[in-house]
Amino acid sequence: MIKQLPRPILLLGICALLITLVGCGAGSDAPPVQITTVTLPPTTANPTSTPTPANSTDWTTYHQNNARTGLVANAPDPHQLTRAWSVKLDGAVYAEPLVIGGRVIVATEGDSLYALDSHTGQVQWHTHVGNPVPLSTLPCGNIDPLGITGTPVYDPATNLVFAVAEIQGPAHILVGVDVATGQVRVRRSADIPAMEPRVHQQRAALALFQNMVYVAYGGLDGDCGNYHGTVVASRTDGSGPLLSYQVPTPREGGIWAASGPAIDTTGHLFVPVGNGSTTQGGWDHSDSILRLSPTLSLEDGFAPTQWQQENASDADLGSMGPILLPGGLIFADGKGGQGYLLHANALGGVGGQIRVKDICSAYGGAAALGSQVFVPCVDGVRQVLVGPGASLSLGWQAPSNINGSPIVGGHTVYALDQGGTLYALDSANGNMRAMLSVGTTSRFATPTLSGNSVFVGTFTGVVAATIS
Image 1 (tube, rainbow, N blue to C red):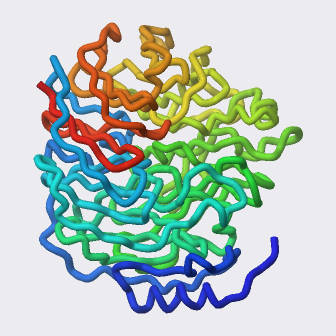
Image 2 (image 1 turned 90 degrees about the vertical axis):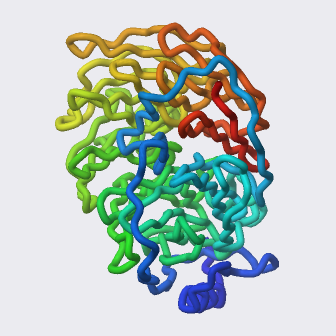
């Protein structure tokens, strides 16, 4: 690739020093640039409003918790779903909405964060953090424009919502926004020198453990350019250098599943890695589930025995994020159609699974209710049962159009189809309890549950449904 003139980089540096709330970047008529190093001095968080602990109705991260189970055990089961309100925003919503203290936090591809009243949908604040990147300026991709795609995460210790925005340049910035006011408290580069921002996409949900925010990167749709699966970590106060891990494959190995890293109770990350460019020779840690330490050192990993063939056919394990189950188990599935049960503390290397079973090709994030796992199969959400002796067996399957990433409330599984319908299914047998048209969504859209409300991001904004 050809390096561009440094003027856009200087503009980005000036932007960060001014700490504007609206962000900046190369103008819309500026040519695309390759940024190998972006100098954005971190903005250290100022004192915020009094930290507010998460309460029982909050939804602070993708699928509600770091295990990514998507479970609210005490939620009511619906007889019907009724549209409560809908709000049009400044861009498509690919990220899962969050709910914090009665506010629905929504990120858009317009590079905006919104706080909406959970009861009425009224906008409480709107913070625009940069100018999104037009698809026409990128070598490939399928989101236009490209802004905030990965689901944000909320930190109750600082009262900040963290998100990564792709801004014109292009570059990726990490922002920490005060949940009460929308004020940007942290703003810093989320790119490392080893990355070419133009061909990296931040689709995976952000994750948080103690005072660290974790951000994972894959490539653009089409796998163009010299991208590598990468995880970076920043302190929540915005200070200090970024920590990072890069998958040691010659190319690709993206960490792109919408659910992002899962994190156990001691802060170890489990990341799903996509296909790499290696199709012969030794395992390059692509097509895998990897365990990283809280400081992003590689500790362990798993890959299917056929990882080389999956690399060659783009049938990677990285299309669905791992889900942490009781008893130190992990369930993983991907494009290849096989589901794997793993030991979290001994992933086993190549072919080191406890169990493997033909299940389905899956994308996005799964959900779990005890020993039941609900998998977002491309031919319909499927129930998978983890039995005695770590066995795997197949349960019910939803109709083929209901293939979105599910969540669980009480004894109900909620999932979307791309046609724009939200379904509520009995978790025991898959029978339909209720359904509601909400508007067209992305294939990775997943609902959010809070109290007796369900929130869904669409291509035009967000919709709220009432459970009754």
